[in-house]
Image (cartoon, rainbow, N blue to C red; front, side, top):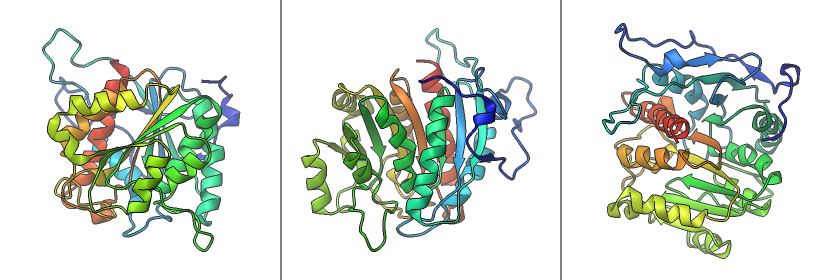
Length: 323
């Protein structure tokens, strides 16, 4: 990380429209994320990671609604307990503190302009915060979330996604939620790995494109051999990078677990597979950013997708602080 800025240099944030962080349980033995997340106005020196909301879905290919996710995920996360079910002598409920910087103020503009705006704001976030955890929002903002890191070393991205999101940026419609990784690879991304990709959910030319870029595609069925084997395969692919960024598109989950996404499909990961993989990857000392995208509360059923997104963040934060 580079030198931090003063609070006066802060990126443009706004407080989300909800009643604040609190753990809803009345049991004095419970500690929940609502008890360890603190809204931040100034310095983040005393926190382990910082949440940053990105309420935007202007680039979605398909059904929209992801702009509502940051607040919904916060609500769900507030009630998630912080303890793990471990009896191996390690700390089941380690002490950590998470900050919430609020939501980025996003302009009412075209996708390319929004990406430029987010790029400038997120460059400051990467300078300022210990570990930014972005609450999306659609996948188009992955590009500006990662792009500032490209100036700091060799960057690898792990994209947990049913799709490759390597579409070409066309002059007639510009960038979309399907183009972020082609944009990043064009800008110098060192290593791209897509985990959980589905057969029959992409196009042959995009598979060939990833192959030409020396990228790696790990289909969802690879988890049949166990999560540990998938983690090891991804770590091998990321062996030569300096910085690691992990992106979770909620449609990587099977449609039964995550109906509230733009394009729910069968054949995806289980929540347990996703949680275990994310927890392992978040323990990598090179981790420089994490995001959950494409969660659409208006399309959800009984809060299943929102709850899965919140618990994905809980597993990532726990993996990060206990590494």
